[in-house]
Image (cartoon, rainbow, N blue to C red; front, side):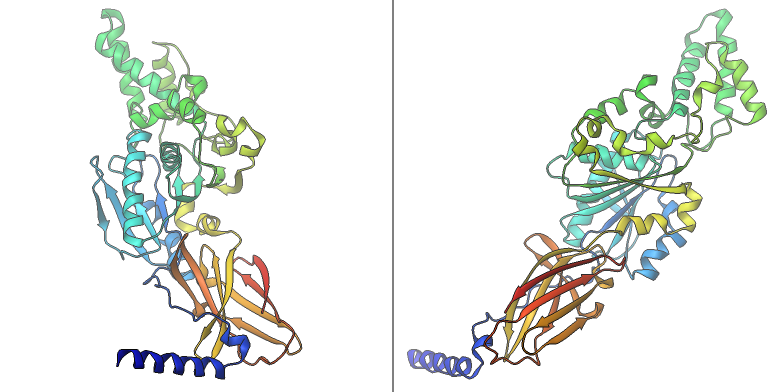
Amino acid sequence: MRQNLLLVLVAVLSVGCASLPDRIARLPEYRQTCLSASMKVPYPIILLHGLGQKADVWHGPATEYFRRDLGLTYGGELAADRSGNVRRVIAGSGQADFFTVAFSNPVDSVNAWRDELEACINEVRRSTGADRVILVGYSMGGLAARAYLCKRLTDHHVKRLITIGTPHLGSAMAKIWDVTTSLAECARDGGILTRKPCELALSAVRSAQDDVPFDSWAIRDLRRPEDGGQFLRRLGKLAHPLDVEYISVIGKVDLVNNTLSKGTVKELVRKALSVIGGTVDDIFDTGDGVVSARSQNMANIEWFNVEPSRRRMARTVELPTVHTRHLSTSSDVQRIALDDKPEYKGAFLARTGAGAQLVVDFVDHVPALCSVALDVHGTSAIVRTITASDVRLIFGDDGLVARAIIPLDGLDLMEPEPYRLKVTITNGYGYTVTSSLEW
């Protein structure tokens, strides 16, 4: 009985296929792929704050660009502890598009931030199903991202790193760490004649600091190699992943908010420093604020400079200013984070019922803003243009990709000559990519 049913089923299918035009009958049947539930980007965006800051530096009008203009979903504010446990300080959607990170200690060492970032990346990948992320690091947040990439050289899961006003080569301002620690040592262990002057000098220096203590681990790590800074010297020699896109956003920026340069305080500190030697003028860069433009450029890191091909990996974008107030009132950085050409991944023809369709896979940072146009060239011609609502994210072999499905109706299927199908993908930034195949 079962054998008879199978024979009947085969016969029905054979008759069905035989009734189809040969052009369609030869096509494989399209199988629905698991769709992403709600994500609109293939690479979730993780925003990292800077030295002495909180994650709310990203909140407000800046992230409204992601929400309002791009329709992206906020995943919440992530915070990790030293054990690698991650909690959401501000709740958000699990399968979201962008997240902020709140480091537990805003003046901790770069490596402490690195380890917390690693836990947050793992959490984002777990909750979204994405294989890779985009990191946007402001100031010291950019150094934490670089330290993470060097630590996880071959399994980093990062597509792109954008650093903003990051002191990759350090800052002359960070020399204040040596001054502060030397004065503290003198005030604690100095002789009868030097202890009191050192105490007064230390008090004067500390009166000039704001949210970031001058003797913090963070300031220690941000010293320039030429000033005795060991952390950035070592980090600059480490290999960086070759499969990451590196972008340095450069502009006028201060390392920390402090009053060291104000007239009365500066003069007081100048006199105090005479106790151990050195001048206030030595603490500041010239021309570019506290973090020089040269220091903000990743291409100037020693590892990138060894080979010209490495230097070409890192591109720069210049803005008039990258102060934190600019981040909160402008979408410049957010646009830069996503500005890129779409990547064509492939296309194939498939059958759905009695019809044929072209399936196009591609990658773009915001697929919902992409349009996919199809030109069909042959004896009979047709043009199909699909809109953003026809693009879906799917989980493919290489992670999340965008998929567009274009029905191929209206064609003369008895035409003996092959049709040439030209696909043009245009993203929200105006970039296009084309490819073609025959049917």
